[in-house]
Image 1 (cartoon, rainbow, N blue to C red):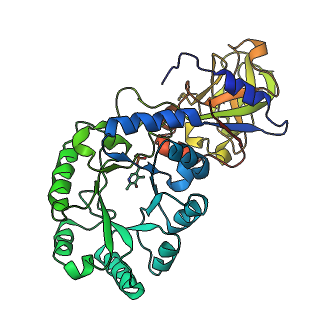
Image 2: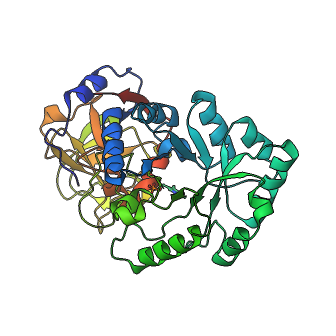
Image 3: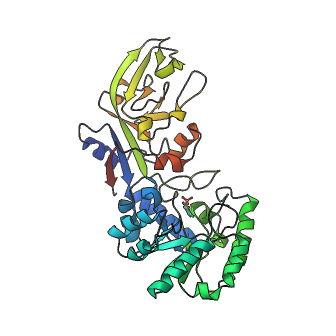
Length: 387
Ligand SMILES: *Cc1c(COP(=O)(O)O)cnc(C)c1O
């Protein structure tokens, strides 16, 4: 959990005060934090270029808003997952190089050309399809090649990578502008798999002299300069999630999430809270019912019960433990220990931010911060603040 010097910046308080009366929740995206995270990762990786991974709508935070800020910081390269995401991003940004990580779906080559986007070719079939398309068009269009150094998910395995290096007619049909591989255990600094992948990546890319190389995601950047090569591809670290498994998170939280208390009421000891009566009150309890739930991406697996502590939220500096099950549209928190005036009907409860991070909630729900961010629902009133 990251504690900032001032956990509740004045700009946030102001934004909450300006929220429309009918908004049940606010997703506040701090562009200043996004910018500082980019600078931090870029400075760590320099002189390598730092791209931005903005797939899945920039991990749920909004690709247009996020990339606008990053582009102003000098970011020239964006990675998305799908051809549609590439088209969408190109519709907004004419300048950056845009790569689609999920590769070349059959028949999508014209779409890539039209969007001036680059597929990350992940099999010999995809390389052949792209090369044939380029020959037909009489233009060596740019594309990256993904090589598999251990993920067994996408990419040419070692033997096929060596085979490709011996196919000059295929390689001359298009412009091979980047070779990509992806770390399997990059978040674990001591995992020997990192060194194995690094060695294989260095060996295989040496078969393609002069072609720029990219291995590191956010976690890979933290592994040090040997992993940086020519271009890094951070995603989660930009958005404030924890790239490293242990130790403190060096990134600043970008998303602050607030839910509105729709009811605040006292309940007696012995009463149960929520579906299936999983939690009984041990004392007379002031319950704050907040208008957010699993339909908004607040995982049901983070529920609380008699045998298990669930997630928590904050009202100012006061911690409010979750009570009972997470419902579709509602959460119930224990506000007994907060002063009455800190938790009121219509007031905002901090669900995520510096005191409860996306990784804290993820841990309670048995998942990772990536899933918390990309699950963010559509009902939040979204505010982009730039300090
Ligand atoms: C998503 C993704 C990234 C970004 O990873 P983070 O862990 O979010 O920094 C980089 N490279 C590839 C191939 C990816 O799929």
